[in-house]
Image (cartoon, rainbow, N blue to C red; front, side, top):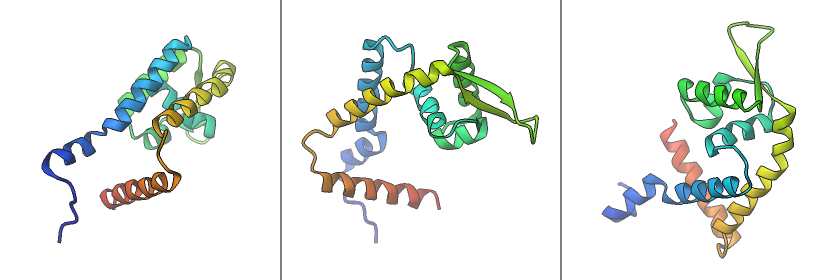
Length: 147
């Protein structure tokens, strides 16, 4: 038996991710106000490199849920901004590893603070237990669709 608890109009809103879009817009506005020459998409690549520097472009595709052409474009633009550099892998020269520059390292704390502030604004008034339930439900939805 289907477990769909949404009315017709609600499902569309759920799928389109209105909350996610609102958070991304707010975060972009805050980056712009802080004079950070950085898009949310570029920041998402840097975020994963801050967690683990030296990822391959394919690993960045997987981590950011983007396709190869998108990651190539993002890395190209981050290179132009002197925030990352490509280095051929020592094991397989066909693979480029992406490394952060010192300039990207200097941006990390400021951008992470802005992201945390934005998320706190988004979650204002939401009890922690409801946030946890939401995280669990969204993880189940993701897992169900990626079996």
